[in-house]
View 1 (tube, rainbow, N blue to C red):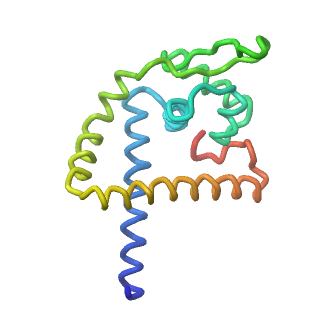
View 2: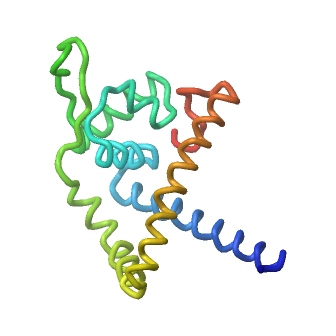
Length: 162
């Protein structure tokens, strides 16, 4: 059983990890000429696939105007394109355009270092880590949605991503 001091240290370690991930995301975005929200939105599109601007706005917490400007920036940079929706040509779908080479280059060092770290774990340990990442991502997504709903910010920018 851990002592309160050990739990505090674990919490500090975890907060340091989360801060490092966020800072790396911001630095990576800047290195590619993007804002942090732009990179976040691009990641959402690459993981979830094409979606309407409204869906992207909902996922990023942005209102209509900021979402349109975000898509404009990503489109001008060559990361996404707008295509007519197959079921309703009045709507558009935002699609990622291939893998951005500049972004891959910027992220390569961290990916290599993380890969080296993961290579030191057993298959069983990796199973636990990836189970944690999957479950924690879901918990964070649900918590963010509840926070937006509870504070009346559903679909609005929280200032962090804008």
